[in-house]
Image (cartoon, rainbow, N blue to C red; front, top):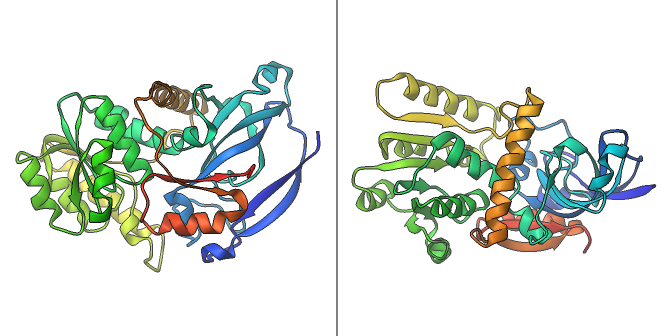
Length: 342
């Protein structure tokens, strides 16, 4: 089968309107590969950083962005994978997802429940894996605890809120005042991030919180750590506060690593971690097993209705520039989704 794929290419450090729409013929899948017709892909913070050349380990320009996707298997390269044909699957790609068709390793595909539409499932791929692993594999939250989620209206943030509530955890969530109602609708207690966050959180949790999930980094990470109760855990998973800084893109991350390491060696009865979804990928079988287990658990909750997909907006793939602009505006709740078939 010969397929001509439509792809969105990031040619360099450009504004969103500098994205290019190209077409490329894909070869038939090799043994161990599957050809996916992409039904939904998304705009995450990673793509926002990549267009600035500031994502920690992004490839050299030009490349096709797209951190994750959901689609249907249309062809496989191995008879052993024939059962995949026609199935809706999800995949974590890091790059390459902004396309109408992609070739992926069959072992990297995770089946999507029939109850979940493609756009709904898309909101839970990278966001769901990230939130689930931080909550349950690292912070190990327990029912009755209280956590603080920064950016509670965002893609990862809104998923964190819902997963925590499903586990019986109380959630305080930072957001702008205009997004407070959305945070309340998710089930969290909103805190205005433009105000005195420490005072607001202390008023709600005088003894501190059991975990903080911080994608912002920068100087505010100190407040996040200081808001922890004894035995609490700080999960840092980004440096959004430095997204517009010039200079070495790795320096903010390295500074954050150093600070977290220092906190962990000091006798303070609290812990601090940096979450990287790709940690452990050198052991491919273990890495894939964890991704499959965790995303399957998230999908199961979504299929039951315990998680509600937070779709900020839907755009055709060819309107990726408009989608990226909206995602970067920080005015929306949830994830901006690209639909290649539109």
